[in-house]
Image (cartoon, rainbow, N blue to C red; front, side):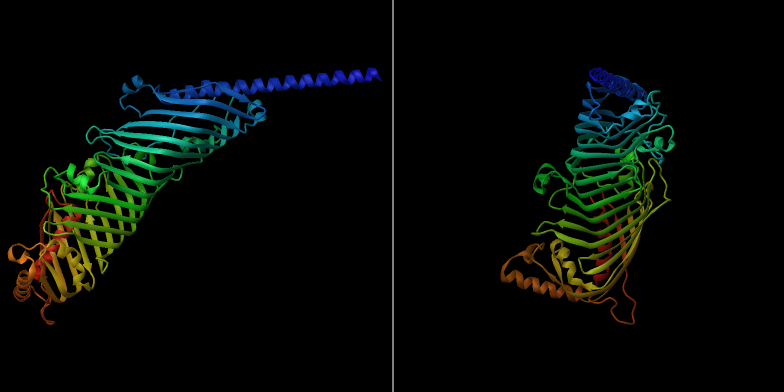
Length: 560
């Protein structure tokens, strides 16, 4: 009995020793594969793919095969500046540092038998990325940019024929992105916290489809909050939430604000010759079929469809100040100055609003023209950088409520690559009370509309080399005006009973001798038509130019 017990003990010890040796061999085998993979292969691959521009450094690996994970204290991807500047086209200057990184759920049996590295997840607790992109001189093509896709085939080490990781997550990345442009100044984007998620990361020669994926992943999702971009000068672009799916080529931004970084008073003090103060907001912007790489690298905007919800543009022109050293560009010039191509199949705007204001001397408040409940669709929004041609025009159709009162439909045709300011526009204003225009008229002119009903206004014009020529036909009845103290000079602008009496007399005389109260004057007569002729000046914004063109034609009809 004691002898049998001794044999059992020896057998148990032998099996235990064998197991320990087996585990040791397995651990050694797993470690001998993972260490070269991360330390030698990854470093070598990044250097080869970038032709020596980028370098990967990492801290010591902590291998815990009982818990089936690999831990790395830090990873650092940096740019070899000396090598980069010698390239004909230098790559982006990149510095990425990731901390507390863990590869979890490693399948040891798959790894040990040489079938590849298969793991559940890879993640780094925090990280920071700084990217400096120098804008290329000129981009005249609209071919897709191979962003995030390796051009050459990645060769895995012989001991590791494939790599598959189900989830890759970086929950807290800080981003500092700078686009360097010697002509227009730098554009900077700061993002305090970005979440980066990748699904089904795979490098597998047996599956050729994995090589064409962005970063070898089935999906790449980015989610950021409170993004701030500084496109130069004294303006800022703020985005409350930014989400992108690079695999689906979609991008969504919410709570978008483009505005001066100064208040209107500060802006006026620091820029005494700048008449215009512009803010733009959008509740939601969504792009589909977006070339994210071209957008990030400053090589143009390319997308199938862009949708904009709850858009609002507020343009204020202050005529108190002299205009100097401020030139507004027309659409073709503005696009040409971008120095990059734009290709959007369609842009759809829903529930927008545009407010144009003029702040005139002698008036307490600025006059305002409001285009409310704006719906717009633009198709064939194409600009090829460097091209100068009048064909391939963009078509834009808009509908809104002018002063929240009358339906206003306008269509535009704009050749975006024309060498000069060329376009056509035509539209119709539906029925509305004429007094609704007082929100603008009485704050800009020394008179207001006292009564009148607008039945319809039709207009059309062709803009050639910055000169709008066309016709406008307003149909209205019972039009009458009052001369106002605001904006009037001399005795007409004096307070008290004398000034009030003089203005009453002036109003009566104006209505009798200067204002055509009905158009047409009689049912059997054709309506009076006005001529549109307005020359674009460098001090005008585009909304101001369009409004002045229509306004001048209207005044020709109204005056007797």
